[in-house]
Length: 569
Ligand code: ADP
Ligand code: MG
Image 1 (cartoon, rainbow, N blue to C red):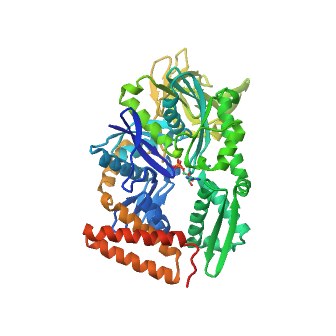
Image 2 (cartoon, rainbow, N blue to C red):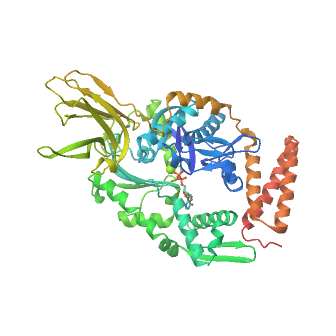
Image 3 (cartoon, rainbow, N blue to C red):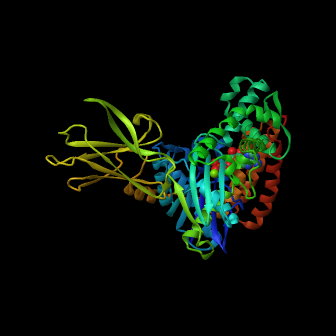
């Protein structure tokens, strides 16, 4: 069984291909969205998902989120005393999803299709693959998220030709892809995006606006408790505006109450700069696809943040029509990954859909340009594979040393679009030794980019046919196979919170978060309720725990609705 996984910045989902259709698998809380958060509990066990997200606030030193943004780097995140790399944290999320699927399917799950933003670099893709391995999953394929979304829709649009654009605004990333579906061949014509634009930015913009409008003292910005409460209120308000025209944001600090009314028009105005940033990746993708807007048959929305009417309106204005959103935008990528998993398993229903993808960046080498005579200009970027070339692709270019007596050529490999190599991202370098006394001093440099977005560089000396291959050295962002194996066993030893207790554990985590927001009597009351419920849990007797959990949930729900507004006495 191959599963499809959307490993998101904010939320992750797992889906399978079953009876000719993709199906999402809920986690132990019965939810299909698992927050991409990890926390280490008091007893040292690992919590993933909602409980971990609650603990981000109560136990920030023991909890982590947003680690997808660090993928491909060598950043270290400490949860308590233990250090984790971003791929290890991602692996814990993957492992939790894998266990959810195993529990639902009653069979081991060992293979997966995992989605990545189209904009992910070589290092980020390799880190994602490593995360899969660390979770005990063989990564059958890395699939671009917009391609997955298109695939989920492609099934429904299978007859006839269709050109469409996927507009994916998640919690922290924005991806645009232009796709073409023709006679069962789906091709990504172009993709572009912004790795640092998402729904969270709308929250931080509103938080700033709240400080200004409600005249909140700037000093409160360093009050973690206040800021957490406010962010939660703002997130709620942002979502409320997706369903109703106006809402109110309120916050309280001791005696002082702060308040801001917000309607859609004001929300749109405050976020005008963010909305404007949606435009340029769309324009770039269309330009690269050489497709006029009018030729698009459809615009597909993906990502939870496209639920915001202001985003939909912006999209509608840009495209001159309303985008499609028949499939739930935060589920569409995972569903598409399951479609791809189905393809992999050669399910008859999907046999015919073929898919091609594109390279998100130009890839090339640094060269020296002769200006005149023996005047040279160094460090020019010479692309070998150009951005948005359909992959898999293999391209070769011939280079010659500048000096007649030159013994080595230093091939420096870069990705990016800038004219000068140093303005692009360096991927690695390769030393090619040249033989002396041969007539043809040329070197063929071959770049091969596979469907997973992994790059291989090979240099062949023409005269001797000697081949040099690129080993990306000194890249702190990547783990070697050996390191992966070591970390795999270290991770396997970590204690995972028992699945059947996650629901109650999540409830306690949520109550603890609320407890921090309250003061005075309500705080005391809630504290007593938490202790009472913990006592019930200690009995390990379901006949006692079940009714206690039900009662406790009601109490927690009550406080959750009131927490930020409650007077303190
Ligand atoms: P990612 O792909 O980054 O993991 P998702 O596609 O799950 O993210 O989208 C998460 C984002 O969607 C968050 O910023 C969240 O606030 C936003 N979001 C989810 N539901 C709504 C809603 N109803 N209204 C507005 N924003 C929403
Ligand atoms: Mg997403």
